[in-house]
Length: 296
Image (cartoon, rainbow, N blue to C red; front, side, top):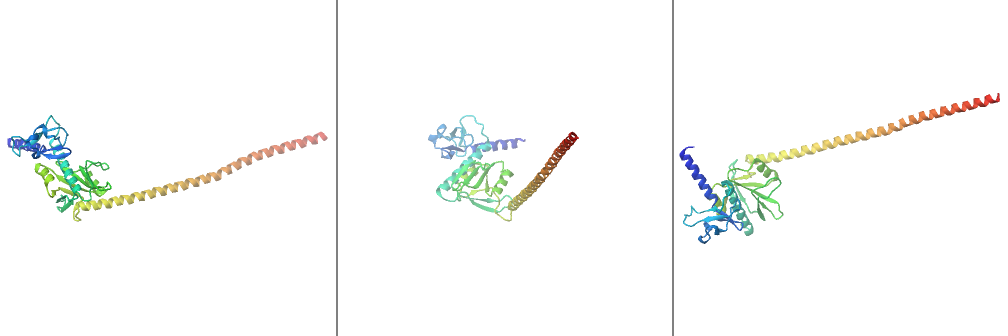
């Protein structure tokens, strides 16, 4: 790595770390470092880290607006990505929660990554609450809005370095929920989430445009699922038919055995009766011959 590249890399890392520590969490709400007044400088700020939950120290005295930031009071294992990621989640939760309580729109717009089509979404539409990392089946979105019946409405993912996996996108398409992505790279993105009138979204899945490849994939997915369901039903019917045929065959075989068993029994009884009859006849003849012999 060249000297200039190394310098740019270190400068980028330092800038990123400062951006990530521009927000602390106080009483469950995100607080920007600029909101910390001098009397609450240092440990008096009462804020904790958005990612690890450990205490923060506000560093505001004697610094320019661009230099003020939070720092961990003690050593922490927090990394750049986790702090930005969690800060964005807290900011989005607060914006959506406030919009729900005030019964007002919270619009976000963006362009589909596949077709470039523009979309606009109201994050608070029909929502009664918003939750962070609420498990839905095997999937845990960063944020989820719910209606009055507790049904999920909108799935939200915060993207810093890693975009949502294919499994997450396929889950959204399969269950019929829209998944909206917010790309967060720096302090400007976080400030836009905190104060922006219309939030800038990165992508929406599935795309609402019928001309989009992702839309076609969704339709094909539904057709494929329907085909699988029909195939499954057909398979079930086939199995049931085979079982019925097997049962009929078993019943038929049982009936045949039931008919054959008495026949063998009758043969056996016939043989025994014949033997008994012959024995009796022999005894009778022997008796008659003995009587006749005595008379002579």
